[in-house]
Image 1: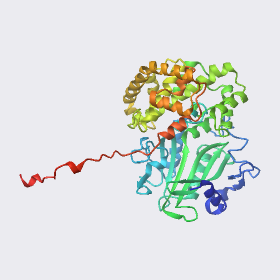
Image 2: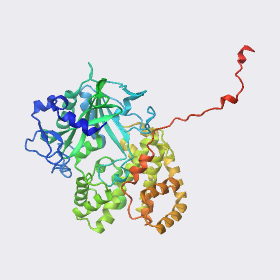
Image 3: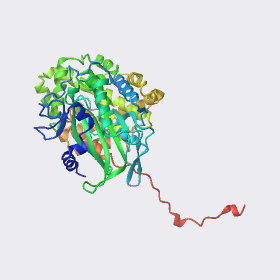
Image 4: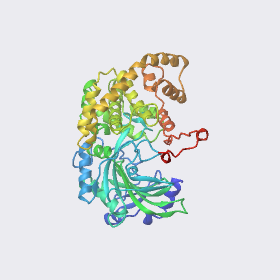
Length: 503
């Protein structure tokens, strides 16, 4: 199904697919971006560029548009309070280990919580209507971006706002109105700051229009109106239409705090503990400039290393600042992010391993170990685990129950990594002698010997970690979960005797 074709079709009839009641009541005007051609809705009749191409991209850094400041856990309380006040049921997150889907190892979106595969169809089972959920999601395709871009995470909280339009739920008009009031009333963002961009979503044989909403170039959420099935032109309306609004809690915290990165306001006290180890002020003007430049360039280039070089140049970062500030800072963010993801995954029953979804978890722990080694850090991982859990347990109390299990499992895994270092060192020397390996060769080194590219960079076997390494590795290990099928040689067995007749 061609997403661009669907978008073209829907955008040709905006009154049918996008023009909700709020736009008419508030005076939003529909504009076409003079640079990329995308359609968007704004209260600024003079605006000519969509949020992706606008001049205000990430201008909230250092100057947040909200009247109040909320960190990660506080931001969720604000979101939950708003939706509960507006007749939504707040439900607890589902496990990040997606046991109810045969095609997914991990939960990748809040709507997955309620999807049930029935043959070739996807049906929905909602425990309440409407509802809101703080769903932790795991995604591994952008691991190389984590810690570097200021906004990429290996796990994040998707605020899921879901509704079925029956006598209890609602459809487009109320959904967009709620999201708009969440921004303007609950978070105090001026209405002129909010821009809606027309888009579509397609997957699992279903599709529908969607409205992404932005503030100062930062996408905060995407309201999807899933209502069709089949191929465009031959499609029919679903028996069960669904509101699927997903918003990033990390981004809600970030927009209110205006910190140089989203990491600064989403990891709680763990940042201070890590920064004290390296003596860095995370609120410095240098970091603001650097991460603002990263944000501006990240979508323009496929090569993250090129983006990083441009940001260093444009922000005027010296070699000394790069070595003493930027590189250690990226390492701190990586450690905090990956450790949080491992805590959620292990709490929900996953284990680092060389098979299935456990592959990604082992890879992340080895990235933590390699970063600790590269920066020559003396970290108490148990203390960092405690810090993460203590910060998150009010929102996710189940983390507290598995605290000691998480510590024990990570301790065992880290010991295995240390034991393998002698072999890794010998292998790295051979790699250095042969010259720069390809991405495929790096994947082989990791799969056969457990050697991460970060380790190879640390020992000068390679100059840079290729930008495509983790996305390619993730693709290789995202194949559908297979159920073990054992065929027994029944033809060689004797006939079954009905012994109860002989008793």
